[in-house]
Figure 1 (cartoon, one colour):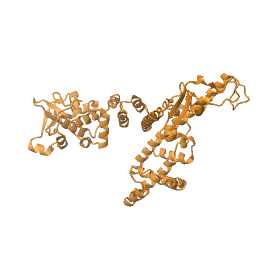
Figure 2 (spheres, helix red, strand yellow):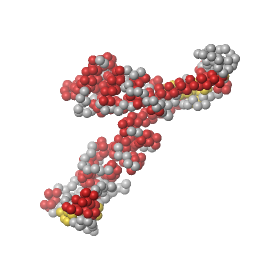
Figure 3 (cartoon, one colour):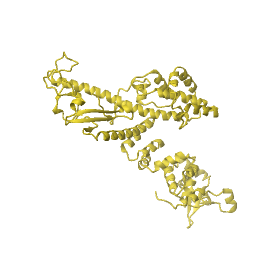
Figure 4 (cartoon, one colour):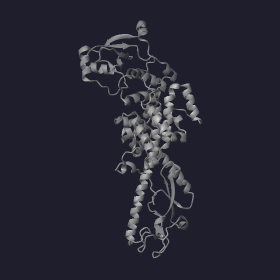
Length: 498
């Protein structure tokens, strides 16, 4: 967007429209009749005005009842800077006269000043997001602060600051052009600028799933970074390091025993140490300590023998005669089943970690409301009685975060002090303690081994408006999706099942 004539920041902050009554008395403000067919439209932040037929009919029969705001250029041309739809409707209705107020333009007479006037006018009317973004961007270029823009636009400073992030993102601006009007979605597209995969994920997911998908992208990025660090640490050694089992055979499938040997022990880390095909498989499937697995494999299996030869069925089935091909096929089938189960475990563990972050953020939003849910006291009572152990066992650690007390090690005392200073906060503190205790009881085992404590908790927050994701629904007692892709379709999962 081209930069208009720019006043200094101080000038931008101090400009204000003249007072109408004082201006009329002093003769600096006048009301005149102008011809809408000859008047020109000043550059306007609304690029696609809606001029309904009924509005045109009304002006055709009654005229323009509210004067427009106008200015005159040096050559005498009338420019309307406030009243775009009235001017367009008057033209379409064939009206030859309407009232216009002159002298109320911004005192500096700048394009930025007129944009501010238009934002004041549009603060209580519909304005396309693309037009609002363009207006904010132009005003920022002209030296106006976020606070000044927010005041004129009737918006919060946070919303204006977020809008500026969207305006600076080429992908988000394109999404606006393509018809995306969800502010939260556009803000996420701006956050992931340059990552086409991430942008596609947040663009096409359901609105209810948007917080989860966005957090999943952030978590996946953190996992990728951690994987790179772990791989780099092992690459300093002598063994080859890989993150996929492609072209690598697991040690348990190989042996150094002759094909006709009765005892065919699998290769171990110690017996395989000197093999030139020694390979380290590194899997990092989360951010927890136990999400890192390092296993040994062999990239030159021809230097060894298959553990299942013609005369050797698996030890678990000694009575069954199997050919080498049958034994290998059975072993492959079992390995695949193990891999699929491991994939499900890893994918749902990752999903649970992401869902936990989103759920806690949602709880913070809930606790910031002035009015708590009507059954909040009942939830607290049930927690303090039936689930008293959870409250006592972990001390409701994290409750202070839910109600915005940061950096306090003595969270119990800090929360008590808050209630003493502000008694009407007692309900919020009670609920925060109960929620923290119940949240702290949840873990990855909540979906692996569903229990009534976590089930009831998740169903309660769902009742209060939290959108449960697929893995949370498993923990809440809902049937697990039959479509495997619903929980395990994750390209970033590397299975190490054996």
